[in-house]
Image 1 (cartoon, rainbow over the protein chains, first blue to last red):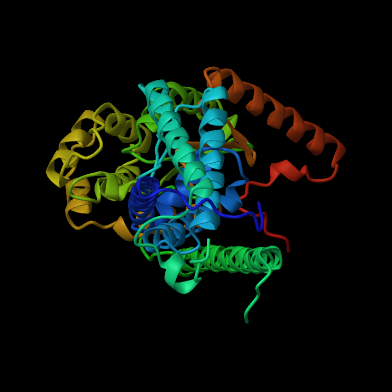
Image 2: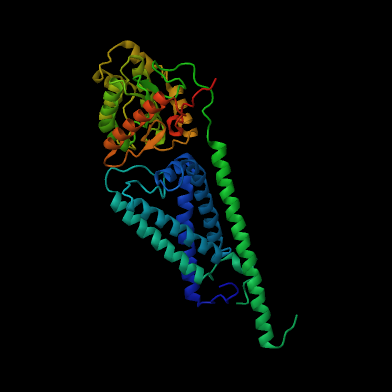
Amino acid sequence: MKGSPIPVGSLGSRWVATGTRLVLAAVLAYAAATKIGDLSGAGRTVALYRIVPDDWASPLGGIFPFVELVLAVLLALGLATRQAALLVAGLMAVYVAAIVSVWARGLSIDCGCFSSGGHLTEGSVRGYVLDIARDTGLFALALFLAFRPRSRYALDRWVLGIEEC
Amino acid sequence: MQISDPEVRETVLRRHRRRRSVRVSLAVCLLTTVAAAVGVGVVRGTTKGPGEPPDRVPRGVSADRSGVSVGGGPVRVDLYVDYLCPECRKVGTVLAPRLRSLAEAGTVTVVHHPVAFLDDRSVPAGYSGRASAAAACAADQDRFEEYDAALFSHQPPERGPGPDTEQLIDIGREAGITVDAFARCLREARYVPWARYVTDLSASHGVTVTPSLFVGGDRIDVTASDALAALDRAVADARTGDERAGSAAGPHRPGQAPRTNPPVRG
């Protein structure tokens, strides 16, 4: 992957890549904003998953939204698109794995994907299915972008001079 | 630099691309790490320590002022609930009666920590804290457990306003509290600082979710379907552990020290 020529892509596929970039950026920015507005809630949400020790939950609750925010900014600007897209794919894989793990252990919680999560008394399975479907879709979009990172209106071209490809 | 040979030119370009790709990857990794560090820093900066305990604490408050203590048994049980949390209601109706009878039998001391984690889940915000402070007022009338149960049977849905102060006073009647002192306590918001203290103290002890139940310092999974059996088992274990430790004067069991109430060593 390193040093391999980046596919130039037709004008059409560059527009598709631009759309993908902006969709991912918007979703990440929204997710980050809701969590940064309530960081203690974000920490409690991480604790609800019962995957990491309680002491780690609060710091992790701070880490996720700020990483989401940085990736959203990079994607919105079209800067280091391929690397940012790969990281987003990794983040989505982590989220999907976490939700699957919660579901498998029979916990019933609200994923806290765009808010602070909580316990649910009903409807958790429907929530898990929707959350996993959404995050898998975002994962696929991010992977697509990682392999076709050239897009219109991207800073990559100006800042990194990716013109010769 | 003019390179005429297309093959050489291609090699040079590929090397450039590789170097640039590595540099950009490193920069993005660095940026992400900085973002993560900022996240941790912001959380550290905004997490409030509990500060000094407030002057006014309810009757029956535990020695560390972190909750209302019920019963005098040898096994310490710590229960953390938020009156707005739906899962806590289940604990309040299923486990609380058992804890009550265990406390009455002199087996356990239950320390109730009414925390307000979900203040922002009611509209307007603040029901959790008001309910927690009201429960403290009920403790002054020796009716904490009754009022606790009444609050859960009147639990409002999230995103609603929740009972206001007058309605919380009415709920007190159901718990057998009719005295004016109780109404006065609620109206002057006497234990709002204490409720905040309990909340911050719990968070700083790493109790971040409600409901949380600890028997002798060990967490019991209250969301499991057999939580009642798990509670009984844990209490029985803690008792035999106590007796053994008592008869043999053996070393203190590590799990025995409740995390919220470290034993004072002289």
